[in-house]
Length: 134
Figure 1 (spheres, one colour):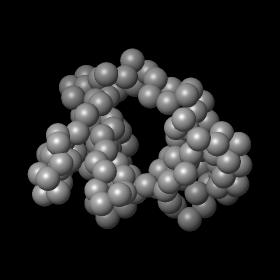
Figure 2: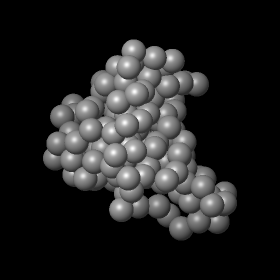
Figure 3: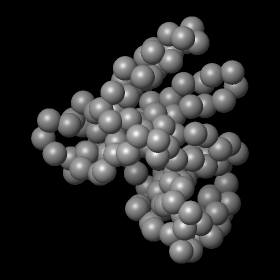
Figure 4: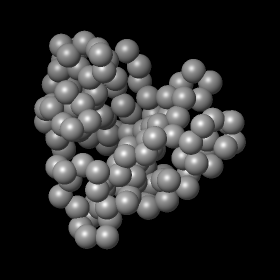
Protein backbone atom coordinates (compact mmCIF):
# COMPACT_ATOMS: atom_id res chain seq x y z
CA UNK A 1 0.00 0.00 0.00
CA UNK A 2 1.07 3.54 -0.58
CA UNK A 3 -0.29 7.04 -0.20
CA UNK A 4 0.93 9.30 -2.99
CA UNK A 5 0.57 13.04 -3.49
CA UNK A 6 -1.24 13.85 -6.73
CA UNK A 7 -0.61 17.33 -8.14
CA UNK A 8 -2.91 19.03 -10.64
CA UNK A 9 -1.97 21.88 -12.93
CA UNK A 10 -3.81 24.18 -15.32
CA UNK A 11 -2.55 22.98 -18.70
CA UNK A 12 1.20 22.85 -18.06
CA UNK A 13 1.59 19.42 -16.43
CA UNK A 14 3.81 18.09 -19.23
CA UNK A 15 6.23 20.99 -18.68
CA UNK A 16 6.18 20.50 -14.89
CA UNK A 17 6.76 16.71 -15.04
CA UNK A 18 9.60 17.05 -17.56
CA UNK A 19 11.20 19.77 -15.44
CA UNK A 20 11.06 17.65 -12.27
CA UNK A 21 12.42 14.64 -14.20
CA UNK A 22 15.40 16.73 -15.32
CA UNK A 23 15.95 18.14 -11.81
CA UNK A 24 16.17 14.63 -10.31
CA UNK A 25 18.02 13.03 -13.24
CA UNK A 26 15.13 10.78 -14.25
CA UNK A 27 14.09 9.46 -17.65
CA UNK A 28 11.22 11.20 -19.40
CA UNK A 29 8.01 9.74 -17.93
CA UNK A 30 5.23 8.00 -19.83
CA UNK A 31 2.44 10.53 -20.30
CA UNK A 32 -1.22 9.56 -20.81
CA UNK A 33 -3.43 12.25 -22.29
CA UNK A 34 -7.16 12.85 -21.91
CA UNK A 35 -7.47 12.16 -25.63
CA UNK A 36 -5.99 8.67 -25.18
CA UNK A 37 -8.93 7.70 -22.96
CA UNK A 38 -12.06 6.94 -24.97
CA UNK A 39 -14.16 7.35 -21.79
CA UNK A 40 -13.18 11.01 -21.40
CA UNK A 41 -15.95 13.38 -22.35
CA UNK A 42 -13.73 16.39 -22.96
CA UNK A 43 -14.11 19.60 -24.95
CA UNK A 44 -12.42 19.74 -28.37
CA UNK A 45 -8.88 21.08 -28.21
CA UNK A 46 -8.08 19.52 -24.83
CA UNK A 47 -7.06 16.07 -26.10
CA UNK A 48 -3.34 16.66 -25.44
CA UNK A 49 -3.77 17.69 -21.81
CA UNK A 50 -2.12 15.25 -19.39
CA UNK A 51 -4.53 12.79 -17.77
CA UNK A 52 -1.77 11.05 -15.78
CA UNK A 53 1.96 10.77 -15.38
CA UNK A 54 4.21 9.97 -12.45
CA UNK A 55 7.79 10.13 -11.27
CA UNK A 56 9.57 7.98 -8.69
CA UNK A 57 11.68 10.38 -6.62
CA UNK A 58 13.76 9.16 -3.67
CA UNK A 59 11.57 6.10 -3.17
CA UNK A 60 8.26 7.98 -3.37
CA UNK A 61 5.82 8.32 -6.25
CA UNK A 62 4.73 11.81 -7.23
CA UNK A 63 1.71 11.81 -9.56
CA UNK A 64 0.61 14.59 -11.92
CA UNK A 65 -2.38 15.57 -14.06
CA UNK A 66 -3.80 18.58 -15.80
CA UNK A 67 -7.02 19.79 -14.28
CA UNK A 68 -9.94 17.99 -15.91
CA UNK A 69 -11.26 20.22 -18.70
CA UNK A 70 -14.16 22.35 -17.50
CA UNK A 71 -13.48 21.95 -13.78
CA UNK A 72 -12.54 25.06 -11.83
CA UNK A 73 -8.84 25.37 -10.99
CA UNK A 74 -7.48 27.15 -7.95
CA UNK A 75 -3.73 27.43 -7.42
CA UNK A 76 -2.84 26.14 -3.95
CA UNK A 77 -5.68 23.60 -3.83
CA UNK A 78 -4.36 21.64 -6.77
CA UNK A 79 -3.59 18.35 -5.08
CA UNK A 80 -5.21 15.14 -3.95
CA UNK A 81 -4.03 11.98 -2.25
CA UNK A 82 -3.85 8.73 -4.17
CA UNK A 83 -4.47 5.60 -2.10
CA UNK A 84 -2.90 2.74 -4.05
CA UNK A 85 -3.40 -0.83 -2.82
CA UNK A 86 -3.57 -4.44 -3.98
CA UNK A 87 -6.37 -5.02 -1.46
CA UNK A 88 -9.76 -4.24 -3.01
CA UNK A 89 -11.55 -4.63 0.33
CA UNK A 90 -9.25 -2.08 1.98
CA UNK A 91 -9.90 0.32 -0.91
CA UNK A 92 -13.68 -0.14 -0.64
CA UNK A 93 -13.63 0.24 3.14
CA UNK A 94 -11.63 3.49 3.05
CA UNK A 95 -13.71 4.83 0.14
CA UNK A 96 -16.98 4.12 1.94
CA UNK A 97 -15.79 5.79 5.15
CA UNK A 98 -14.33 8.87 3.45
CA UNK A 99 -17.41 9.48 1.31
CA UNK A 100 -19.56 10.00 4.42
CA UNK A 101 -20.29 13.73 4.43
CA UNK A 102 -18.20 14.18 1.29
CA UNK A 103 -18.89 14.17 -2.45
CA UNK A 104 -18.26 11.19 -4.73
CA UNK A 105 -16.92 12.28 -8.11
CA UNK A 106 -16.51 8.75 -9.50
CA UNK A 107 -17.75 5.59 -7.78
CA UNK A 108 -15.32 2.68 -7.52
CA UNK A 109 -15.34 0.98 -10.91
CA UNK A 110 -13.24 -0.45 -13.71
CA UNK A 111 -11.67 2.18 -15.98
CA UNK A 112 -9.35 1.96 -18.97
CA UNK A 113 -6.37 2.62 -16.68
CA UNK A 114 -7.35 0.59 -13.62
CA UNK A 115 -9.47 -2.45 -12.78
CA UNK A 116 -10.77 -0.60 -9.69
CA UNK A 117 -10.67 3.18 -9.42
CA UNK A 118 -12.71 5.90 -7.72
CA UNK A 119 -12.46 9.56 -6.76
CA UNK A 120 -14.10 11.57 -3.99
CA UNK A 121 -13.73 14.74 -1.98
CA UNK A 122 -14.00 14.14 1.76
CA UNK A 123 -15.94 16.30 4.22
CA UNK A 124 -12.77 18.33 4.85
CA UNK A 125 -12.30 19.24 1.19
CA UNK A 126 -9.44 16.81 0.48
CA UNK A 127 -9.57 14.94 -2.83
CA UNK A 128 -8.90 11.20 -2.66
CA UNK A 129 -8.13 8.90 -5.58
CA UNK A 130 -8.34 5.15 -5.05
CA UNK A 131 -6.48 2.80 -7.34
CA UNK A 132 -6.11 -0.97 -7.32
CA UNK A 133 -2.62 -2.11 -8.24
CA UNK A 134 -1.78 -5.81 -8.34
